[in-house]
Image 1 (cartoon, rainbow, N blue to C red):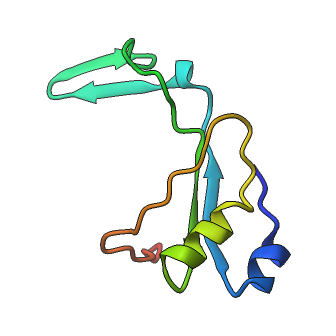
Image 2: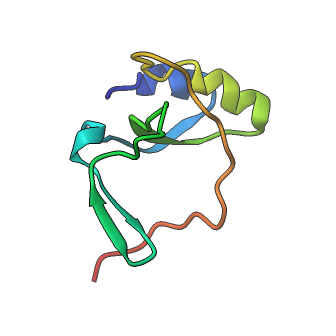
Length: 89
């Protein structure tokens, strides 16, 4: 899952983090005390990966999100709550 760092920087943004996820059939789900293998049956969409982008505002974030590699589907843009980088001990 690659994103063009140079194009994002040219638009005044910054890629803080990015990662791709394995296929949904590799998932293990926890709901309360129940642990199950695989994705939920009722799921129609799955999360393929995550990019954390630094942007000035929503319009800027939307412009930067268009530079992410979309294989199939779309991109959801959301602000983060209390994001912090945790230092390893």
